[in-house]
Length: 161
Image 1 (cartoon, rainbow, N blue to C red):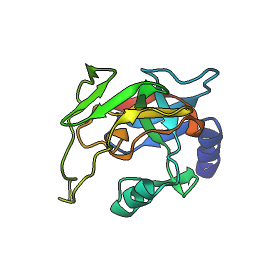
Image 2: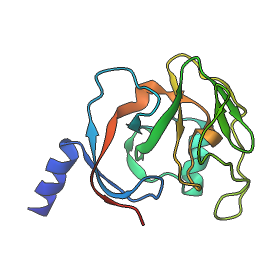
Image 3: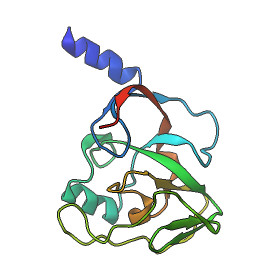
Image 4: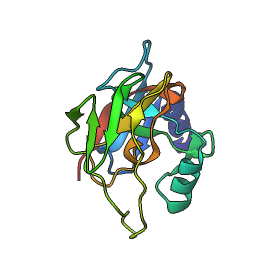
């Protein structure tokens, strides 16, 4: 019975978020029938890059069914292809400050974090952000392929600790 409920939830697009980047709890992946836009909260599979392998090694990414064996991220799109992103003490997109985007020099374990160098978001890519101060997002790993989007992230039963 329990396994059946898990399978129905999984194939119905429901996921449990256990990371503080967004509220904890039950979320649903909602099909996205258009290109992602600034402001969209999305579920996205991270690309299989050296930065993501290091993130997995450091414990920033949980296990899941995305390529590379990681769970999808829940992040807000803050820039799309063609927009200029500046990463310094905080993030700016097309000359406008992004709220709650201050960068950290070190992670929670004291290990150094290397920020993304900034630039124009390439075609087919997105720049992602979470307002949670300790979030590992595009501030550190840069733009990601939009092809990794699973859908919009919709809260079902969540709470913010």
